[in-house]
Length: 166
Image (cartoon, rainbow, N blue to C red):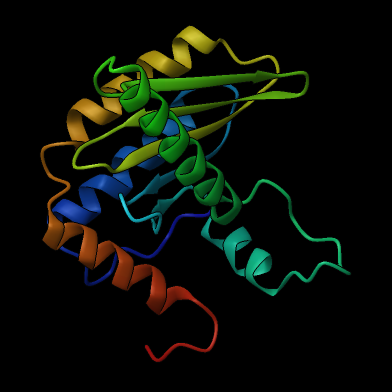
């Protein structure tokens, strides 16, 4: 994992970065993690270096697949789809979603105010361990993910993108 710069961030933002880093480093099989706002914007990422590469990828070039930028897009879409399904079925709010594939897995968990935590796991990851640690992250992060903090996180990601003024 490439550690993002946390210089100049509030203590709450630094704490969220630390929680995300801890999640990725402590749980075997996690390949990529993204925290996505309710409007689908990436707030926090486990691999910001690969996001820069993904931004410059064109359909003709082969670039990194499964970057946090790609993961954020997928998580946002799955979140919207499951929320819509839950409303149609009148079953209440969506807590988590899991997609098991031949070569990996995808986990999406609600954080707060529509924000989502998305995890891309390896095929051999222990799904119950990943889900447990995601729930711990959500429990620790949910109460601090305020509109002000979401704005700060968005701004910090924009400042890290290529060609932006720092």
